Length: 598
View 1 (cartoon, one colour):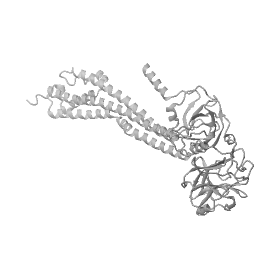
View 2: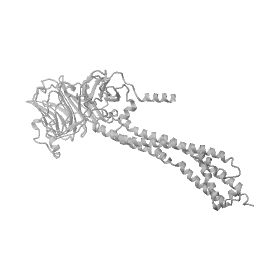
View 3: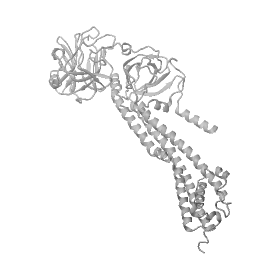
View 4: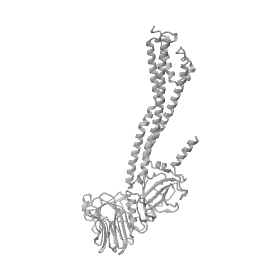
């Protein structure tokens, strides 16, 4: 027993993992390991991006949303030293749908390295600490997440450079929500923080999805007298234009696909980046610009009213962008190429830079791999697992009870055979012993014996067995029929409840497979809704979904072995009954039927 307990404890130790002794704050019950990975096997960013607002996507594939505040107020992010709090902003948090979008400020992201940090949660009394103004560095002069519908988008930076008009609609974007544009420009008023000096620095980045690529569509336009800066698409080809001088043509962007675009000006050159990679560069200085800015069109040529779907192409030809934009950022510095690349990698649907680890409890005992999988199981999969648990418990009870039943039958049959072996010439000598009837009530052979004696003592048999007379062939045949009928009833008794084991063997894996299929469907659907479709995001949810199949096998495998074991023991009992029938008929013919021939 001690060896079994030790083995169980060892296996339990493999399933759970101990955490570091450090814990940022004892008032928080749980934490989750996170990491930004720029190594070649993950993000593959060789240069240092520097300070970066990292996108953390939470969904049911990597987070169970258990124990966290319904609005995420208790979320806290802490550096790898478990001492330094990190600024963060919650863009969206919906535990019912199991989706959250959070920006975490990492002061220094290195190239080609893995940087760990923690997400703490599980403190209902914690006040909200989300702040976009502190999360994004002060060189961002405008950032728009486009989360609110029916209102002009708000700038999340401290400068308050809010747009003056609302987009045509708010739809699901590559990150959270996105602005739907139909050719009408959104105006960004002039401000001191957004003014650009001649030869100065500037950065623009955004995600876009063009509904069509016809004509020339402007994404960003700014004019100040003869000076101008424009960024847009020409037949699907991204371009920028400074004072009428346009960048060289590059590869066209595909329609109806989310793609990242960035323009960076500094050091006498302007560079265009497509999906994080440099596409073209123009040696030109940035002009002085202090006027208003147009997003999704040109203020000088913007349509007076929103166009309809039928006018999309015409609106695009007039300069308005038709499609959706997400995560628009404007900076007054030249952002490094490594940061542009890292932003495109972490924010896109195929992000590989952010790694989501296991959840841990404040006690110092981690949930471990198995615990992390269990925490990731959605509620609907728990229904399937619950059904499988009921099936498992039922099958284990059947195995236990049937084994006990067959064991009692075998022991009683052995006792009966011992008594029957000493019966002598009176075949009915055991039938009138009440003590023997009590002791052998579990014996199937005893019940066969009693059925045979009752048939022999019937009036139609003439009481021959009692008087020692001759038993004719018809009576012997009737005894055999009675024995066969009794043996059939005993076979039914032995086979009772085995149907439940058969159902567990055949149905358990299929029910588990059903739960796995449903779970995987939800994982991919949730990941697609969150805009985070990569192996790191979907692997935990897929592992949790496979738990249903594992449970189905847990039901089926013991049931299979138990069924085969019980059937094997039943066959032994059935063989003993067949032998007894032949033996009894032979003794009956020998003792009472030999005179028939004479």
